[in-house]
Length: 434
Image (cartoon, rainbow, N blue to C red; front, side):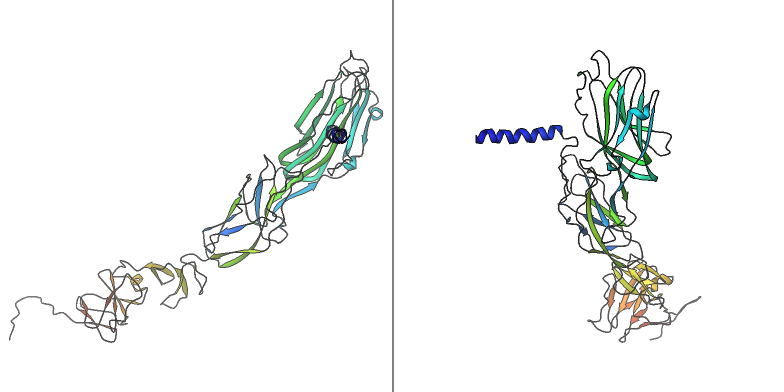
């Protein structure tokens, strides 16, 4: 008895799967929920990229892909795939050569917006060799929408009146942007000789997926005058579009089966800490299924080289300009001067750029009037220290102590430079007197 009961349960379950028109949909929810999103590296410099990743994110079923959306808003508004249902009660058109309004009917057109057991359908019946007839449903979204359009439907047909007659019934799903030029998504033709009043097997339950910019969706079924049919039905369960809006995203990944990642490029001269939220969405689910949204996370962009700055804003160093014109982001081995950054190594012995660390251009026998601690001589930087422990913080600078000379310039005990004169001879001889 137990065995018979078990067999009966299995039999009922498989019969249910066989005859239920829309079947069973095993949802494929992106995991984890919410995703474990991180950004690296952080902080990043201006012009550099911040990479957002979710290594543990995988698809829900075989063949599915997911996208990672890095949102600016906590509800990920305008930064994910959003389902837009077609308007209820699509326009209904009948046509034919006999009495099409009598032999073409619609049922439950308003129930074609949700995946449930209350499908809408168009029926064509009592068609014979003296007439042709058909009907269309047309959904108008109101304006052109760019996204992935999805139509879930199936069709079936009864047996013919006489097995010797053919049964010629056509069905199709179409899509259009202007309402006049239609592109076929899927079309088909019934051939059935199962005998009078016998239903044919259902067509497969199709979930069409068309990506592009469209406004109209049309479902059509019709018979020809050359054959006859007892009854044919086109069933539609849902008409919608998955519209991807990314205007409020920091970044969006490509569609992958697992481990999605996306990048954002930091602006050049902006210091900011941004808040972001992560969500993953399936690209094949109907409607598109998204994970829960992460809690608030942050990433930081810092200013790049040559940007004006305040302390803490630069990716490297914020260095005050000795000319008093502000502060600038400069690399570790650079100094600031006249709103620019200069490398300390091999600075020219002439020109204003050589004074970017308050250095003094000195010749063999002369110096300027400022008496800076740093001096540029033959393209090299020198520092005049007051003692052995008074040294420059720059590795590229040669440190001197009082009494050391470069050319005819000597480092003084107070850290200034003393450059002596040179006797210039125009002609003749010099007599040296002891």
